[in-house]
Length: 180
Image 1 (cartoon, rainbow, N blue to C red):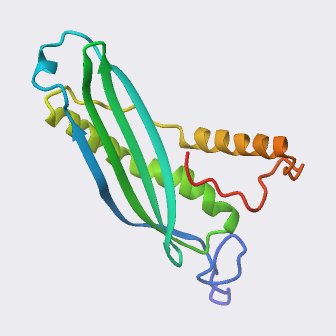
Image 2: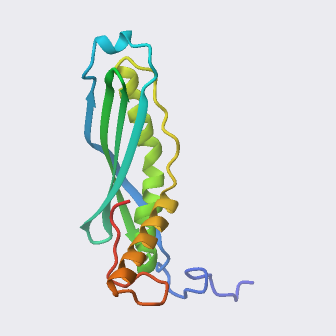
Image 3: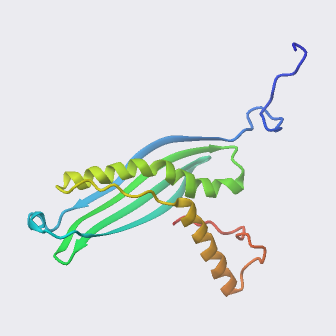
């Protein structure tokens, strides 16, 4: 047993320190706006509002191996009486990615990173709505993987229409969806 060599990077990498490492460096509210434009009359309304929830993901490279993922969530509650409330949140996360294969960076930043910060954004929105005098609003989970795949398919169809598709069923190397 003492004659055996110590294990290296794992998975047959053979290089110590070459394994992929991902870390959340920071999470923060970049922008938060809460509007209650119909107060105080809104508290007399006996109608259930319709909710419109929109989300967007922006990715920006901040430094070598550091990326900002900004999850923007807009929630508007309206009824025939008017606007009940509007919450607009931009919630950011700084992610450090080291030794991540290039083909895995984009899916991580547009699927997994938003999935990791979403529960925190969801809680901030629930508290903001509650602090506005309404019952807390717990947003349903968002299928970031489904949104990412739908965006890739839309881009591939767009390229096919424009004659720019590569014909291989894979995104062209220049594609980089940064918004969902």
